[in-house]
Image (cartoon, rainbow, N blue to C red):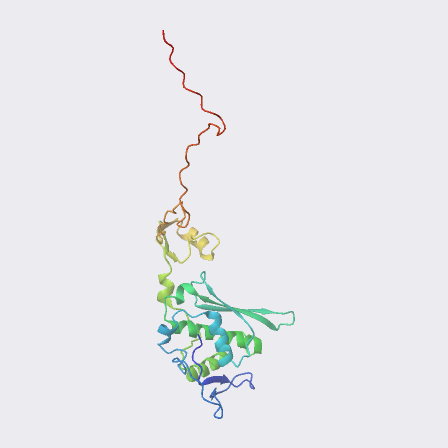
Length: 268
């Protein structure tokens, strides 16, 4: 579902650093008025979207924002939910050719975190990652800083024009902590507690683990984990499968075989 259709916000792209916006009415004055849906003209972060479209399709949102906010300057990009992303709400992964040109990007948003947040946070996180993609393709990324002055300038323009609250970082600490349901506690002197969203026990593959072995020497014992949902027993018979009627006992006498006459009792 489109986030409204009138007016449309366009970015002036003559300047690759992005300096200003303008508003353009979609319906020309000379053209006959067209019937607009009830959600026409709503801000993309209007609370009513929670009711109209509470679970938006990410690819549809991307295509809509690309057309109306980025003037269609972004190419087709795959935008997906990630069930494994539990520390940040979004990520943009660029791909470069041999000459260092950005040829493709992929955007992932954290489903575990954002499904605990209002729809608005999904919209703002997606726009955040789309800015990264835009800067990658337009080569306006700040050297050595993903969220440098150019990025912050872009964010400020979008926030002022759209009424959004896009930030340079978007980590929701309460939601991130709530997802950490696997706990381990050291049985040694330090009694360190490690909490994680995934079932990955502390091990020697982590940098801090060797120092822990030398200074404490304790073992990490798992103390908490999420409850495993009980699986319902499957019904062996399908609901649509008709019951097979019981077979009748066959009469093994041949149909053409005459019945033998009963023997008469002999008189003694």
